[in-house]
Image (cartoon, rainbow, N blue to C red; front, side, top):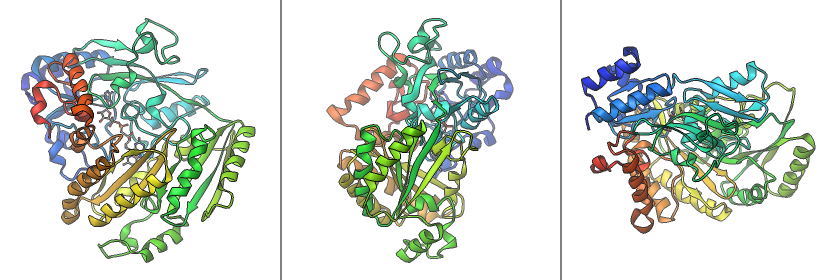
Length: 509
Ligand SMILES: Cc1cc2nc3c(=O)[nH]c(=O)nc-3n(C[C@H](O)[C@H](O)[C@H](O)COP(=O)(O)OP(=O)(O)OC[C@H]3O[C@@H](n4cnc5c(N)ncnc54)[C@H](O)[C@@H]3O)c2cc1C
């Protein structure tokens, strides 16, 4: 496939303006994955930045004509999973960050955003207009409301399953056609952002983590500002507390008393955003218990920590809090701290109250040098013993590869997502030399237990897709049949989620 065809780039410039066609070496570097071990491996050929859906359609038609692969990004802040970079080296990044329209339905608690709207943009928009709706934001809120939801990103309020809150999309298909899903399929239907299914098959989830289209508008439900938020921050002293803590919280999660997804994280998740390794030890080897204890004492954190929150009328949050207290009664917790926010209080400034933040990005500094990380996130059933087992095996692999264990277990309605970060220093060749083998060992371990990742880095999309093996990869075959039908020239995001178009299947790693 031609990636850098001067005639194609002249046509792109004629369609969207020369200044939005970015082809210099500097541009290629800016759209690379700065967290990656080898940034050149997935470097794009160029980037182009249309400003409207009509311009996206024009770009797609040109891409078909010249067979140029496009990699759509909303804001391209997908750190840990590939940043702005494409799976296939030499693809052209389709940067949608100039598309920044916001339409809020304050009464019904919905928003229709274009891909360039960041969490900060939407937060400011709501605050400036005093619209009493709350966001759900990811730990790194630098990205896009739409892009994050399309990658099935997560937040920490009861609206934290972002893909589940999508209601209606506008999508440019690979042949340049423009479709609106759900009730949006009827012109000017007032329920586009209100009723998810529409009539007939519903397609919203087909455009999540896929390469079947380019989303140019995304409808999302927002949480009406609650009267109160109450909860507890728990600290647990020992690694083995993970199991019973999950078994204590999970029944309340399942029966709906807890409506957010509490995420129980180890000490390093908290510490890595507040300090650096060098402040505690010059030893490059595994951290010993003395160092870990000193860090925990300084920041008053447990081996594991979790924040549980309730949202709504004060009568209800108070009653829910009592149920939580009762569940933890006589359990061997290290400490618990109450948290309370009441309408009228200043914003609390944290993701559990939907305020965008960027401080978690500080964890890239843990080792010093040019920092980065890669995410490994298998999903497992929500049982304490399985979580303990998963923790021990993963911990052992971190130790074997000489890395510092950084993990959390997010409790969904019916599942646990074990989000691990492998933190590294890109200026340490010895450390970087271990990352790939470690990641592969982790995926092999998950697969051996029949667990699959919910999301992965661009380098490992084929590896993870390959682990979904039922009936000779029937799901991948289905995905690729759909891909070939919709995108015969294979121009949209080849290789995304392990889905390759016919002409490029030889690229599968
Ligand atoms: C310290 C740290 C903490 C983090 N915490 C969280 C967290 O709590 N929760 C979480 O979810 N993530 C987290 N992340 C990961 C990531 O930074 C966020 O998910 C971020 O929001 C993703 O970037 P983005 O929103 O700009 O999406 P993008 O990078 O623009 O898009 C994500 C992917 O979706 C696809 N896509 C984007 N837009 C479109 C479109 N319009 N049409 C079709 N496909 C599209 C692209 O393939 C892209 O690769 C964290 C990262 C770091 C470094």
